[in-house]
Image (cartoon, rainbow over all chains, first blue to last red; front, top):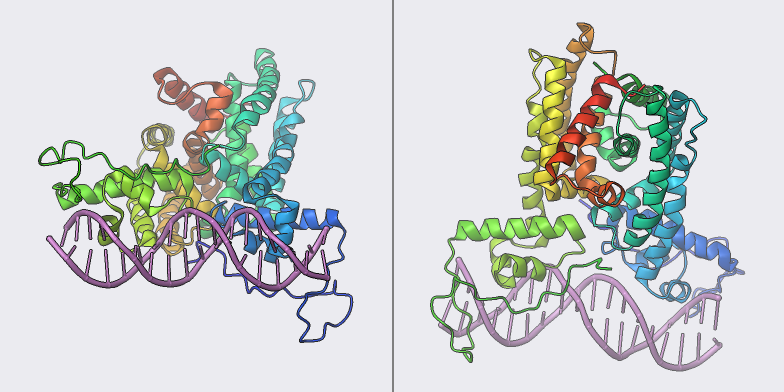
Length: 230
Length: 230
DNA sequence: GTCTATAATTGGATAGAC
DNA sequence: GTCTATCCAATTATAGAC
């Protein structure tokens, strides 16, 4: 029962980046020639994968370094410390995460807008589940590192989109629903398939990677939100 | 930005459990006279509060001990190590968490059953948000410590209740919906208000502790699930 | 910018008196 | 059962050569 990732083997494979075959007794590892930008993004990717699974404190910088195939001290050269790295990962996330909601526009047909949102978000849950999970982790823990951004950016976005939903309701194109709660429902229903993927897997025995299950999920979620079940 | 709880001050207040006013220079703390059962539950309660907020690795046994007002080594006398304590907390949770779903019965009116479930679960999100959050934390991280229970107990329960939902659909008392997805929707919609409470608070500016917001939430979630919005 | 080596600290767990 | 004192392993972060 791994509450932590397996211990890093310590030795990183020199892979294809090595310049020459190192003599076995060479005391010094071959210099890493990847461009710096690639390294940064490799580190951020590895950090996302590990933080989202094991949490900030359940992940060591050594593990991140190993997975990104850089040395620990090189990682700490690029990111001053572990928390800085964590915040950098989170920052990249927020935009991706809010993009689908930004697409809501009052001139769309509400059924269309909602269906498209649901499909886009479930696709995101399939393609970037770690992003969803890290976001969820951060929320659960009170979002200590995002709190300010949340209070500002998120609040404004939801406010704006609530106006759109409100207009739809006023036009009689949607049943009466309080916009906040509809937004929460859309978030909850779509993220669930990423955040609780193990539970979904345990119960349904399938994952979003199977195209039929993906389509079935979109259909059911759309059905519930648009038509209800009763 | 507290990604960890504040450092325990180290000194625990002797409180009202002390037998006599300890002379300030006494080298030995007064013996704790609480019954053992009380201690265990105090420790479990403190552990739930801290684990649900900071995660297993983000919480130290010393902090749990401090919050439960026992010494660290006394805690480790009752629970052999940190992981044992964590699992004990989780185990207590699962039953509470599944109780509302167990109430589903085929002879109920589906609208009634679903409405009651939603109300009960949102009440749980209000009254025991830490339980919901710890459960969510554990799921996100792949439920390493619950995986077996999940695969068995949860799967069977959902299977049984799916049959109930299926019967309702077959009778034409519910619109066609795949039972799994309805169960996921009910979970997601109701837990969201506990797990993402900070986000709800940031966006809506209110919490479930306010009775009007509680009722408004129940009404909106029921409306979406039963009638849909379009 | 990248590495090796090491300092400094935290924190889980144990020993042993009472 | 409860305490004090301590040990030891794991990790973060830094120093300094290249």
